[in-house]
Image (cartoon, rainbow over all chains, first blue to last red; front, side, top):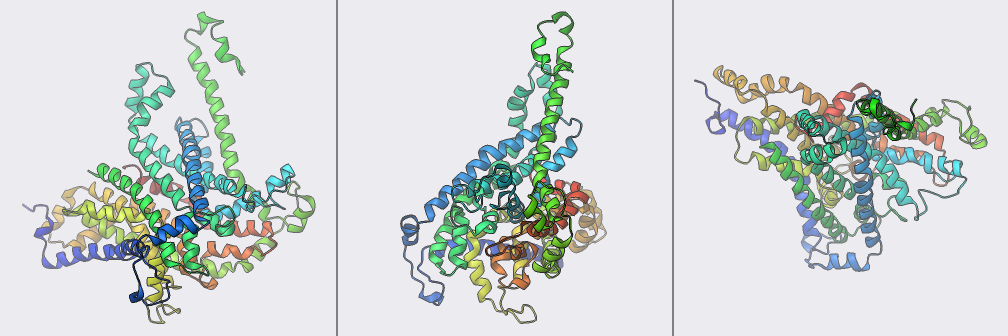
Length: 295
Length: 307
């Protein structure tokens, strides 16, 4: 009988093939993701200016971190902006996307069309979203100012531009969340709802007591996606004004410190490491959920 | 007909209502929901429609009559934006980056997924975790080492004109592949695990090696998820902005999205021109959206839900 072959029973050639199939992608990912991640962490403890040879690097402990939090003016505003970003996506855009998914899931007439319209922004890049909304926000030619007669520069005025960017960003996020939830809702066993109906539960109770808990894995994935998206928000503010003047985000500060005029490696790395740290907590969550599903 | 009456009228005519109220209220609420959804759909599609309409309008006309006028239609914005943003070049650049990146991503993730699904590696879960996690890290936090490595790695000139991986297409492609492989590998391995074992067993009896099993059994059967993932990856990599901006520094190598900035002047921006440029850039993804909608949605949701 030909038994299912485990890895130990493979011929020599096959072992090499399997080895390559694992090694090539793994090396690529290790080289371009994990080594850089470790590199960022290491560099954040050094004073490397990016010019001298690597041998001249000195470890200076937590000094970069101390500097970032104490003498780098844009840092705290950036943290605040990232938190606002997260709050808006998490408290407004995500629940709204969910709400739309629940309504669309009833499959009333026209649902398909509505659904298509709402997730259309998902195929557009966030950079492009920035350009499209410029037509609405621009000071002299923008739609809002044409309608209201105001002269606010929605992308330029630090009092408003973060919110303007958030509206544009939410526009896309809502569609994305809606799509994920819609898929989740379709996957809920219909007999659960039937049972709830027989027990006399109304729609709202059914959703919150029966459907929502069953979708726990999707909920967690959506939370993680939301957190990560708000942490790595970059494209939109970069096309608006390269993340200055009210639109500072940690991601843009890191980039400015490396690409810009002054390349402050240790400094940028310290902020990069903070981003890594925060994201890895949520990545760990995500991987655990996904892997548990896996079994 | 019974616009707002339904909920409050119920107690009044109770005898007949005893059976009726629910369907009537339901129909009413259906209409409300439909109305609400239609309004939301309009609101959501509005910015795109607005951009499309104004992309066809003459700047001088809208400047004089405002945007609430009707008229001044022209194709000139498309002509101008095509030249100013150098789209004939940057579209090619986008293709040069996107096509190899998507093919490589799919091939490499098939390899990993196949091994993970087919052979019981002790650490196949760990392997998958390594890949999936990589997909979610913020790219900015990896920028410094990647940027420095690419600048330091020298490659022959036939490989990259810049002489290093920085400012070269292959460097950018490699980064895109490294970031996207995790997600695809995860989706594919789920799919491959569901393939019946018996298929392989008979192949093993016939003496088929690993390579033949991979190419002749697994890959043909994986067409549905591959189609979905290809659609999704083309969109994502075409849209990719961050790495393209920081790793390619000369304008003549930029993909389309990064070249849109050329349409904005230092002091003055013609928004109708920007609109035309945006429509051009959005066009490939919009075509995917309308033609391959099912594949796109399947790709997006495959990773989040099982099956």
